[in-house]
Image 1 (cartoon, rainbow, N blue to C red):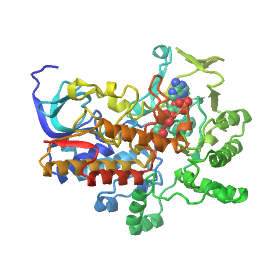
Image 2 (cartoon, rainbow, N blue to C red):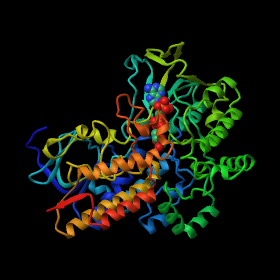
Image 3 (cartoon, helix red, strand yellow):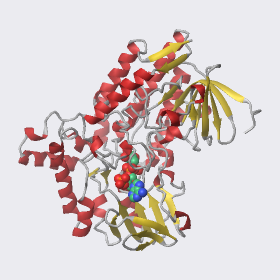
Length: 538
Ligand code: NA7
């Protein structure tokens, strides 16, 4: 990159044009009147939903809750077609929003940020891109998502594989033809569980390589009925209110009853009803499922029995139901005929705990037990979650300090929003905020609105610099740990919440488990107290 490249100057630069970046642009540009620009690596809006085009890609939040709530008109005019929106429909929605609010004129597509450096003297962030463009702005806001850095495990021999391989989060736009092919899929997280039945229906043969067995509850996806839509139209405000006031941002409340408030028979009936209803709501059947292991065991046992009753082959059923963590301690998937897919003759499962992968050969995957010949390998192996997308931006704060150094032992910040030594940098849904433990649009809107209000307040007071303190971060890290330790979540040792899926990544429980509503109150109080925990200056 030449230093002669002209620098384009803005009030605010936003990295990423998904749900977060689009709303942040709209808020800063159209509400505050700032000169703002979004830099986006993809060729279109959508973020997660731009990249994740794998077979079966669908949202696990119910469609009527998976949208922005900031505009009543937008809420009223958009109609989802199904209970759980499919990737192409979500992408259509986000394009609709971008067009409706005329956002694309201030988004630079095909522009991957490769560096961001804070210039103390000028109080400016300097941002550079892969193609050598240079930008500067007073505020830098990352809207890079929590699950956008693909994790392709370093399995020896991959480069020698003679067939094709794909990561689900970097799926070819034209799709992949599995017809008649021998497909191997590594990974049985939410993504893998969505992909299996769809790939199985097309492939000649599908072998699923499972490291950690997983729970899943049926989604019971279906078209939305006119009756439901009519109900939604007349109850929209209540639905939004529910989402904003519940711990996980979903449009349903968590039951107040505890597991042992009812007898075993009644409990079974409740689980059966929740299974029949389907979806993430299963987790809300009792209030203590995520805090009391003995209570959790009852849900875990129920789902394991369901798996064994669905999967006819006892060998496959044993591998699939041998689950080592409490239910919902890892992100709980929901599915459309996932376990049923194993009743097909062309689908098999390999237990990697018994026969680990040794290498990839030109012909397929070799485990410690045997060779599996394959034409296509699908990596449904997840992401370097939460910190990965931030660290790969190569952010350098005051004094040239790298974010990677500041977070060497794991992420440390205040409210998930700011890091000491990195003034005027805000991280939407950063580690230490509820983010992935919440219905994402709700978490995103709260962050965007808080950041926008903060910048607005600063401008009204003639202030130009905001930076959190080490003391505020210490307090917040302690609160993030306290909140996690009050739950069973840290008990899932192989969880991306803990960074355990990426070798060498520090083991820190990353999202804030104290609940979205509680978190919102904390953020509101911080603002009401003149941004307590931050130092503001001109
Ligand atoms: P996840 O939930 O991280 O799942 C990844 C899966 O891939 C999981 O089963 C992993 O097993 C498996 N994995 C990862 N690395 C390996 C290696 N090296 N060998 C074998 N198996 C491996 O990612 P998803 O994309 O499914 O879901 C991410 C989120 O997107 C999801 O939670 C929703 O919030 C939406 P492991 O469990 O680590 O043993």
